Image (cartoon, rainbow, N blue to C red; front, side, top):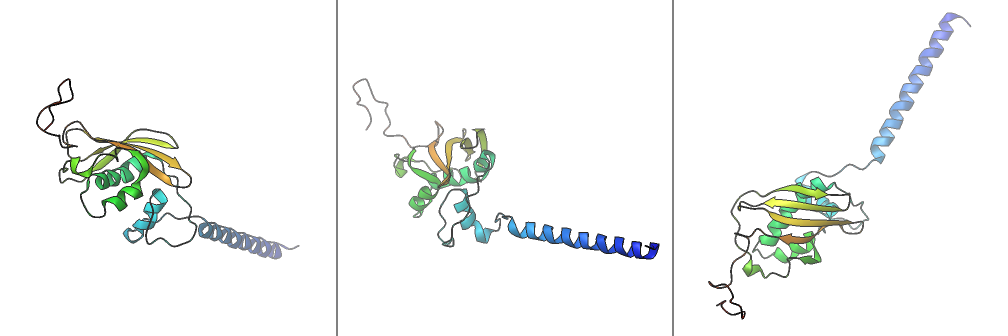
Length: 185
């Protein structure tokens, strides 16, 4: 084989390999899941975190298993805001972020104090693949503490919320109970 034919064969083989490699990359990109990040799709991404989206399509979606740090930074401040809110949609939001038997949900909403008007921020205290303990600062002296559990069917849900000693809850009466349990008025 002369050198000219050999060069043409090498160029053709290289071109075919490049085209094949580009095709495989395009197929891989189209086949992989891309997380939604726009505000218009927040309801759907909230469903992936563990809530229920009202405008989500009626198809089976993959529940993204976020890391505990992401849950504490993104989801916990929203759950604390839902818990402390006095708005009409509080019950709907609490159902989105909390389990039905979550600790702290038994406290009446009128006992939860108004929170300072600041942007809440969350951080992780501890976490594993299926649990997380988060702190959410709402402008009070101490943060709220939220515990989370991850399940495959519901995603991340808050299983308990505890407020700081001062500023989280309103007090009953102006006296502390005496030994007989009296004193609150």
